Image (cartoon, rainbow, N blue to C red):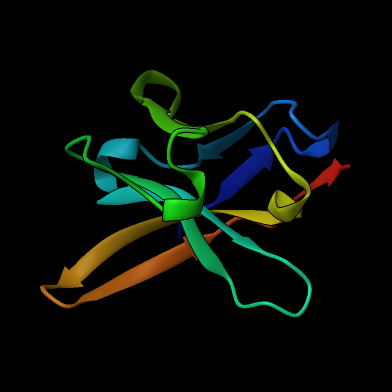
Length: 120
């Protein structure tokens, strides 16, 4: 089992920045990828950004140029640097990690979520 511990959420004014951290309980090299999802009230959970074990990153269109996902292998930690935040970014942000079990299947692991609130 993989445990994910998130930190770094909070309240920020529009235009501000926050950095989220997610530490895995296992070696990051045993995971195929890690990333961040978010869910606003009444909405479905959506991908924000992810990074694979080989370092390939993927971003949702709505965060390109504003958010950066990165890994610190020695600490088994993934970060999400969020800049130029706007009220539409308000949501619970969830850390995700996964291991592939087959070419089209994977096991997903989730953190408990951290609230990000952007005031106008």
